[in-house]
Image (cartoon, rainbow, N blue to C red; front, side, top):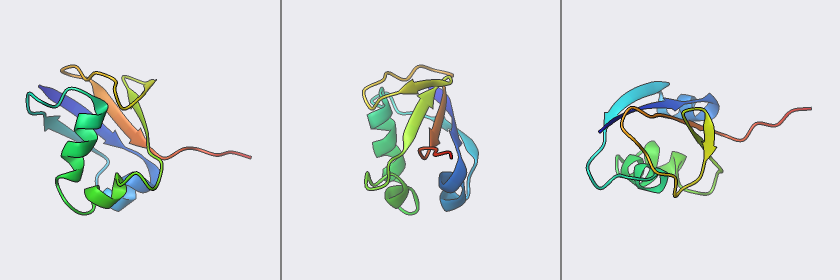
Length: 85
């Protein structure tokens, strides 16, 4: 299954990547699985998704959680929390 991943703000800067189409293995079914897959790429993905700095995720522009199921063709966006003043 192929999904479209978008990275925003400091994540895009850290990864040097704003978006990518990624073919997921059959056992990658949730956001948590995807994060583990990205971390397995090594640096800079491992430290970007290390859990110490909060990263939000949206699937098809809907806020999602770690256990949210991923479907073929989904747009998955990762971004840091946004603050305003």
